[in-house]
Image 1 (spheres, rainbow, N blue to C red):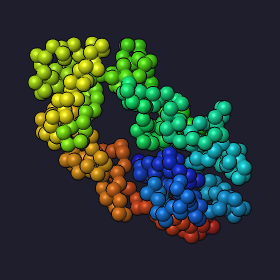
Image 2: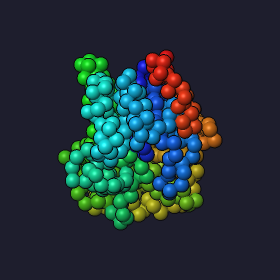
Image 3: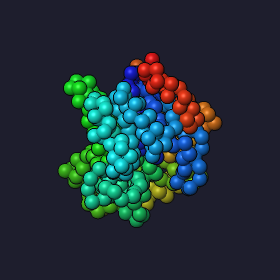
Image 4: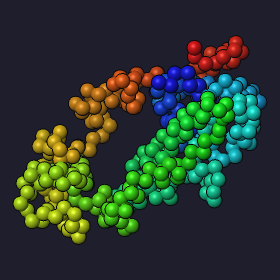
Length: 368
């Protein structure tokens, strides 16, 4: 769907590479500019193949040298967008800031991926996904009243609030550039995006369903929208919110006439109701609960690991997961015309350097 879109990525960590991988999955031609030697967060050398580079072409360049900077400048002359995830001011110090690049290519969309944003009191401080999601308010309701808030790994900030917002910004900027001939700078801050995705939850506040105090709202305090531990130590998730789904849940559990569960929205009784359901679900294995409820309108699902999810019949039929290059991978999303797209392979670091440099010398580094 994005065939003909040309993107240069100054490789970093986390949301920037995921954003460019997502665009490459959807057909964009992405050239990833990497360091010749890259270090991981543990201080060890990164593997020669980065799964986030699938479908891209990899070029190595030292941006602290004139030669490395010139490679980037030549690449962006015919690119639609550039993605970078440096701290504010770093690209400018390298001589590759927006003013320089937009002077070379006035239609360029300069995509900036950061946690705190390009300005503000926190802009130049270090941080990670859980810090950004915490400050923005997005992590406040993650967990129940009696436990510390816990970020759903890097999904809430880096991906949902960061990478996907950057992707929307990049594509919006490209559409605008094609209509007006003018490029733009996209300031994609995780604090902005992770706050914005709270919009739906904030709407619940007007209905009295989102409380300021943790553990008293539908999603973090009710008994019918919760996860429960089973007899085998595995977990299941309920989302029986609507009255008809709740009624079916009670019927399946043999609680249809139990006075404790008669009033679904009596928030004073939620802790007692939740404790009662916890005992019930602890009495059977996850497989037994799946046999009883999966595929019904109870709004039920097992809490699967990615490996388990890859083997679930629904996920198998849709081709959500696949194995390649010795690792479990996830297929591109969304789908167009019902087709599952097979993403490109994961390149070795610097694999396409000679090819791209030759293209620059011969007129175009981009795929035909």
